[in-house]
Length: 259
Image (cartoon, rainbow, N blue to C red; front, side, top):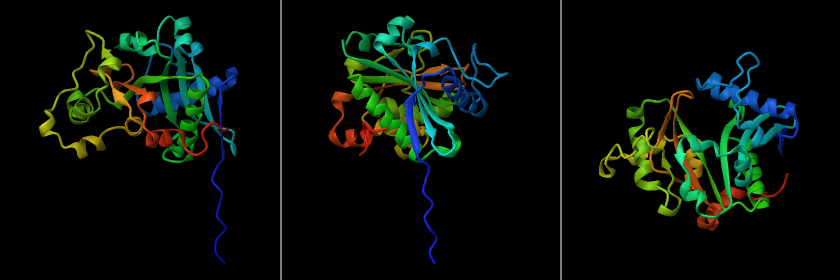
């Protein structure tokens, strides 16, 4: 007899409402950003295995749970414009001049600290994280999403091709083109466009950045080398009004707006 198919895990997406849920999100972030990627920070709690910072109280923390185990297997940190006003700034304003976004008069949402448990990457958990985000964006009538996304490591020479590919092919339009702050500005135009091996460059781009590009995402001008987190950051900007219908379907999926 043929084997009976084993159903995959089911997931629940929600905004963390308790300290226990927030700590579970911070514990997953510690596993990924500190243990796996070698990051750090002033408020990282190594004794309890929590990756946290001073901005956490101001963010909404979207979590994805595996319903079978109850474990938090995915997180996203979300900061709307009104929440940034209470925090005093957006998180990425320590790295980028966000004046083009702030002056646009549009509803902004900053994304950050997105990660999945290693056992759940490339599967349904990411889809649920995206659809949860799409629901949040629709509920709060968000018009522009942005946030820093990272390449692992701080050796810019090793990242010259993917950074240059992003600069030449995916630079944000002038009205949304944020720029790395003076004194921290790392040029991304490191390899001339006619000398790029675009396929090889794209293979070196992290999966999360590629996902944003498929959705019509663009990048700001200049990278930021973050030695504390052992990353090289680019600022991604996605204008929901510029997304075409195919991109919107990729983003929302067939079950957008459901839990």
